[in-house]
Length: 325
Image 1 (cartoon, rainbow, N blue to C red):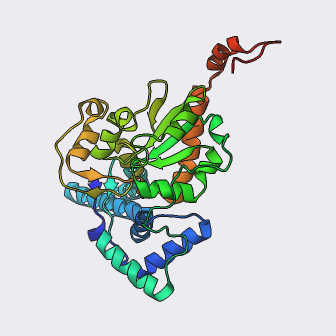
Image 2 (tube, rainbow, N blue to C red):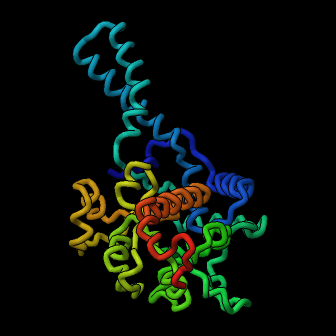
Image 3 (tube, rainbow, N blue to C red):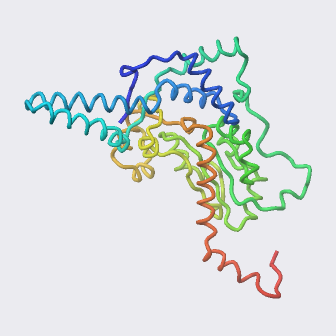
């Protein structure tokens, strides 16, 4: 369920070169990113997906060769079996659920980043660890809070919330983006704007971890939102991390389960969590995270604003009539 590729490295890459390449790639894309996201970018450069495919081919060919040797098959059949293994191994591995251990420790990454900053300066699009300005400010226009806001995004990781705001996602989606600390409880200004919307919603962006499941299970209590506001999860589940083969870090094993969340997980997800593995939202590449959130939010809003839902609201506004408000 979790794969460590350190022992299978076919080509050793210098972490300093991997850091330079990762910073250059992110600067070319033009997105702001956090330190944790840069760490996973460097890890991806050190162990790219092509390495997983190469390891799968090596293991498949070795197993097929040993099996053919034991059965004493003719060389022709051995060659055909090896060719089939070379072609079929990568797609088969792509269907298997597993995560990958980062090839570089976080402490070692910090040392490489410190040396890089001394020589070249701080990466210009790397966000500092210091909290930025509040997500909700007192506007110059006093009537701004008179307008409804259809949804808000609450991030378990405060750094991810700062990254989304730095890339202007809150302006593009016309919503509030807050960290869990900023949203516990939900500010009155945000709550008032949500209550003016016809179908208000709060989306939770959380990690694939026991702590992330705890945020989902206790979200309504933590945010202190009324029942008129729906709370939905847009975060990672263990299933997402396993099928996308994301990086996972192992923490202290935690056997304190959340009964309501545990019932929704399958056997592999429960075993993965019980082993202490965690996949952070930062493991998603920055551009992919932004695109995924745009697509997921628009899909959720289309479902909430279905044709039948709008029909039910037409009874207050019709031909030659004025709205109630």
